[in-house]
Image (tube, rainbow, N blue to C red; front, side):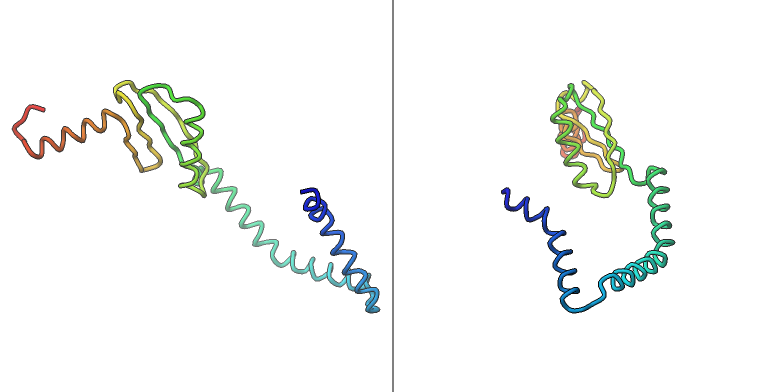
Amino acid sequence: MNLIIFLSEAAVPIIVVTIVTHGWLSGIDIYKAFIDGASEGIKTVSGILPTLVGLMTAVGVLSGSGALKAFAELVSAQKIDEASISAMLNIIQKVYKEKTIQLTTHINPELIGGFVLNVENNKLDASVAGELNTIKKELKLYNPDSRI
């Protein structure tokens, strides 16, 4: 492991020394080549700088407007521990990769058990009350005259 760390820390200096040594042995004016390269680099930066500033401004405007955020609401029948909330937030973040998730939690004992998760326009109802309502609707389909 120490060898890998040493090689990763020494890689850039080794490459620089190798390039300079090769140039010196080949009789190249290293200083002039460096200045010419830096001059071309400055020209390249000045050419793409307006585009970069525009992109950075657009990202700032989008971020400030909240367009890059996803609002999530977790409603549960009982208090959910922080580890479970964190795990759920990680799962939501994997689905909404390009957005920052803002999660709020609420307790609603009428759910009986389980939870309801709302993220933007998507709803996941994993509550006991939700399952009972689904069963009730299916029973009414087969027996519309029942008093369920």
